View 1 (cartoon, rainbow, N blue to C red):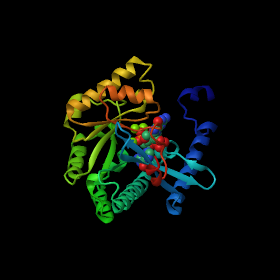
View 2: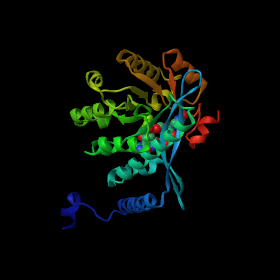
View 3: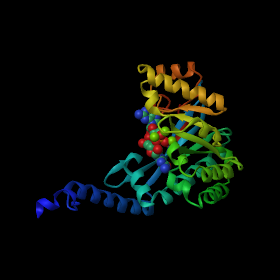
View 4: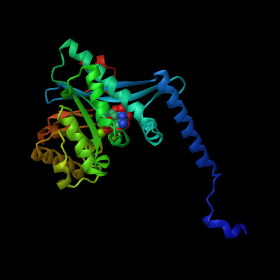
Length: 273
Ligand code: C2E
Ligand code: MG
Ligand code: MG
Ligand code: MG
């Protein structure tokens, strides 16, 4: 009997699976609490031009947990996506970024800056995404041209027509769009041409070994050339060394983000260099 069952029986009591599942529900419960207790906050990482001047910043969410300490998005974004908590979390990040832009607009130091906000597939696919985004811009009084939304290739592969319509609706108000982690997905060139984008971000996995791995160097250069021929801006992410910066600059990249220019930190730190 036991032998006959053997292969096709699903084991509900695999201790490892159970431990993982309960760790996940604990994280989910903690996240619900954290949204109420305001434990999430936003850090900013600089994006600079070849002279090192600030072009803008990327908003990156963090979680200050009373016991766990500082928790990075790698730990909780996928659980937030699986549980729907990404919707309130995403709105929180967008609102924080817009409030920050509004505060900077008061100081007039920042006329041409943009802040980039990451958007998960589930947020972007939500039928109210466009309306909610415009409402936050309106409530905070931010110039929509100061906001860039970062999408990923995999998000855009699903229901392309709907994505294009949403992008056009926001772009007609001035909001910009950036394709994050570019090169890691499966975009075809024909498809890329159809998307109303402003910017490509070279994934940091290609930047890391750009000086030592000829394949990564070729991919980085191809992305830069592709962006140029499509009339898009291109940003290199994960730039950690002067050598990487120089290589990318020599090959036509004019926007950089990475630890070389500053780690993600509080908004005030953007001025501190
Ligand atoms: P991403 O959008 O590609 O963001 C860049 C990540 O690279 C950030 O990690 C940043 O801290 C890190 N980074 C920046 N410069 C360097 C560098 O020079 N070297 C290395 N090794 N890393 C660098 P972080 O903040 O841990 O975020 C990870 C990912 O989580 C983000 O990748 C993004 O996909 C997601 N994420 C972060 N904030 C949000 C958010 O508010 N909403 C959503 N939906 N996703 C978010
Ligand atoms: Mg990003
Ligand atoms: Mg990225
Ligand atoms: Mg990434």
